[in-house]
Image 1 (cartoon, rainbow, N blue to C red):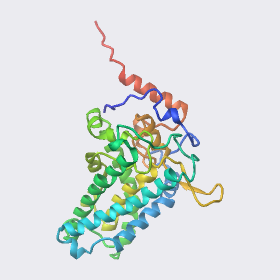
Image 2: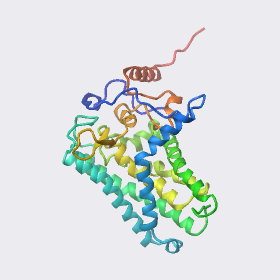
Image 3: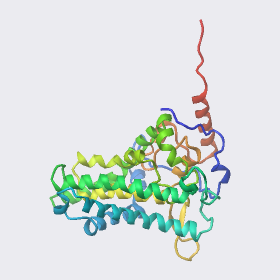
Image 4: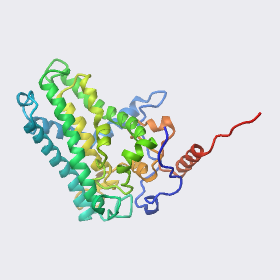
Length: 341
C-alpha cells in the first residue's frame, strides 16, 4: 500500500513538542511467539480498567434506559431513529464537550501532560477557519448520523429476529456475552488497523482521510472528525454482529465505545488530573496514536493488537524508531535500480 505522506523530516507538530512520556512505549504481547498468556492478560486487564468498564457501563445504561423498546423498533420509523440520533449526539457532546471545556477553554491543567505546546486555533483549512467548530460539525452531523444509522438498522434486525442473538439469561449466555465484551475491543482495533491502512492509500487519503489528518494538533473533538466515507468505514466493525450471535447491548458497546473513546484518545493530554491533590490522575490520550498524527507514516493500529510490529511500522517513541521510520520512507521513495546486461 502506498501512503500519501512522506514525513521523513519533523512535522509541524513535532516542532511544538510538549510532554513526552517514558519511552519505549509498550504494546500487548498478544502477537508474540512463543505465546505470553500472562503478559497478554495483564495488558488486556490494564486496557479494560478503568476506561473499558466505563464504556461497558455506558452501554448497559443506554440499552436499559435510553433505547426504544423492541416492540417499537420492529417497525422502521423516523421517530425512534431520531431519538437514538439525539441520544448519541448528547452522549458524544457530554464526553468531548466536557474534555474540551476543562482542558482547552478553562485550561485547568495548563500544559501539564499536553503533547503539543500549541493550543487549538484558526486555520483556513477548516470550515469557518476554526478547528473546533469544524471538528464539532463533522462529529455531530456526519459521525453521529452514521453511528445512528448503523445502530438503528441493526436494532431493527434484532427486533425482527433477522440476525442471530443470545440472551444474557439463556444457559451460558451471560458467560459468552461477557467474553464478547473483551472480543469487542480486540476485534475493533484489528478492524481499525485494516481500515486505516486502506485510508492511507494515496487515492483514498487525498479524497477522504485528509480531512481527519488536518488535525495535526488534535483535540477532543478531532477524534470523530472525519469524512462521511471514513465514518462509514471506521464504524463498519459492527457488521460482525450480523453473523456472530450477540446481543443489542454488545452492538451498542461496539459503536458507542469506538465513537466516544476517540474524544479521549485524541484529547492531546497523556493524563487527566483528578481533583486538587497533586499527582492524582487517570489515563488520557494514547501516545501511540498521537505519534501517528505527528508523523503520519507509523502506528496505523493500536496497542492491544499491535499489527504495526508485524508490518514494520511500529514507532515506540525512541530516536532509534524515528531513524528506522525515516529509512523506511526513504527506501520507499527511492527509484528501483534496473540492471543492464
